Length: 489
Image (cartoon, rainbow, N blue to C red; front, side, top):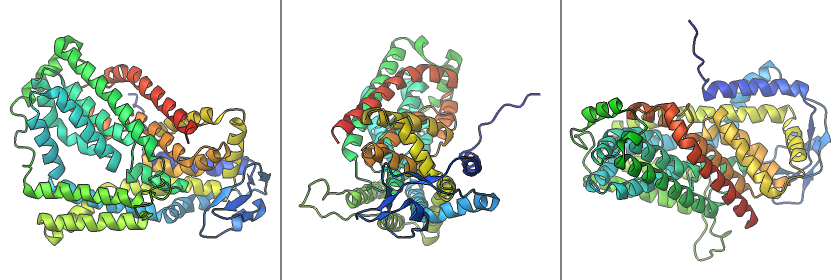
């Protein structure tokens, strides 16, 4: 019996990458740039970079690469690399765990479930409008807190609504996946993508927000049009559906016995309060990270928040919301710990991914990679380079499905590389998110995609055949906006 190949998890990929990079330290030539201490004119020579232990960031100086003696990384270096990665990423990791605890408390109140369920119920009979509104709500969730797996809870509500409207379960699937992942594709303030990538590349979370807003609106409009066009086509001719007739009949038999069916909580006063505080928390978070001074806004003070302040905000807010909702102390702790455990995997992949950079740094090959990359793009314009960075991240996103882990791996390399071509760092972050986002629509390693396909009884092959030609439009538009963003930066 032939065993089917199972794609390894992100953790295994990260460990293999650490081992692979350690082997490269025995093979590749080693070297270093001179580095400038950020915010000063002080330059550290290539020979002294490895001994620098200051608290300020250092930036490579173009055209100063020189060869240095090698420092091959052995067995113990490989073992220590993930641990060093955790040490270097402790601020990000703690933030992710606390965010998980915050969301654990929020989700346990049922407020988000009840809010979306009431929107669906009130818009019954106006499904076209409902599709647009739901897409906007889901995109808002994706762009603020990387809403993803949470969408799986809404299939029992949305599928029957779409079936009654004369559509099919594919419409429900497309709304939930394209809606939430469009928000992730152009995440304005998501702590899991924008926040972590910005932290590793050395900029504020609010930097580059203008282009991301444009990207979010344009891609959202495109995806809404894709869904509405498909929904209209299926309503006119059910044979155009991506699901077989027997599967549709099976879904109708299972779901058409009431829209909410008592499965979702009532949107009462307490849950309205939770939603209000939830939105207020994100409003404070957004204000705290926005660089008003660099935007030329002088009448509003810039708080300049980092991970310390953001972690404290979500931690305190989660506990306060749980208390005001009426949870007992043990409930608050249990829900917080459950939510934190849900994101423990994200925290671990960040540390593992950072371990790859640790090996490259200690093995003195990271600057060699930068040097070779700079030679490879030397003859290209900055516009071509930003699009190459975007396409490279699409490939990397398949290999490293975790957006947080991908940020930890790629940003320390892509940031300095982009600087050589005078590409703003915030544009690199936007390119990384846009690439990761487009992969999130289709990747077979995603619970959002694969779980949704199973629930909606859609063939993965048929889904790919339908969505890939349409995603080429999303890809093209993303590249155009990145190019335009560079020209106006």
